[in-house]
Length: 362
Image 1 (spheres, rainbow, N blue to C red):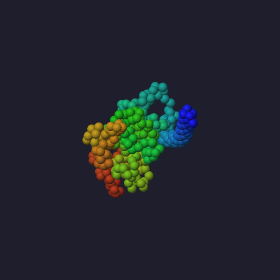
Image 2 (image 1 turned 45 degrees about the horizontal axis):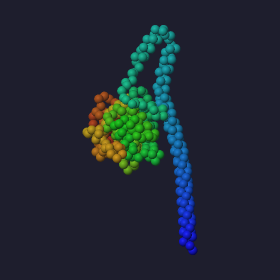
Image 3 (image 1 turned 135 degrees about the vertical axis):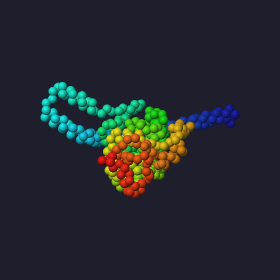
Image 4 (image 1 turned 45 degrees about the vertical axis):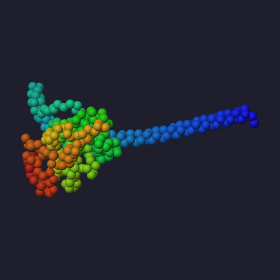
């Protein structure tokens, strides 16, 4: 075979091999694109399914919360109507018995205006106390059962906080929100995290009631409402025999002073006015001899706030919860300068507490 013929044959073989390699490469690329498309469709379908599922859960939760809000408001309105009906009947009977002149009506109106108690307003910034499903958490001096409102709210918080899978939150996130809300403000905390219903409730209660406390006590109270994993609950927050056996307002389960929890439950107290709730909040105190900045640490890598070791140590001990010495008699609470044992274990211990406030309850 001539040399020229051999060269042409080699060239033809090389061209055929190049064409085969190109076809194989194109086919591999086609298969890779097909896999990507199929994977993307499957992922999109999964995301759509998860979105539909979570949207349905959120809709159901919103419906439930609105029903609870209507029930709470109707109960409060019922209490108010029961107190207003006797006064309305007396006024109607007086109008039927005598006819008044226009001047006397004006005089009566002026007297009534002077007799109406004025609501004392406390200046506070960035307050939105009634922005949670129509429930009004602003605590001033109105005659309504604030214990009922708080009880409904914190029973919801307890239910939600026990299900972190639903809330898409973690203990570290809760700690960061708790500290950031007090240190930097609620707006800063909400800008960093989308608030779930539990934190929306806590925000409303804090802005309507807890703002009266000092900053460290606010943080401690908010932390007590978040809900703990079962193994890390402070001993003084664990339910005792009285809490487990006697029906009571759910808000009392979150009270960090066991002797008050036991007394209120044994006494069957299920009513507390706004002024009583406000006075109690001003008197309760978490003892912290350091600065506010010593409550927390800041994680450099994430920017998250963490509770300091010293704060954790004190928080898990009941001896650092105190009650300010009362300057005036206060309904529903014991009247003494120093708190008794925070862990009364017998009915005799509880009866001693009851004797101290029997007159106030009457």
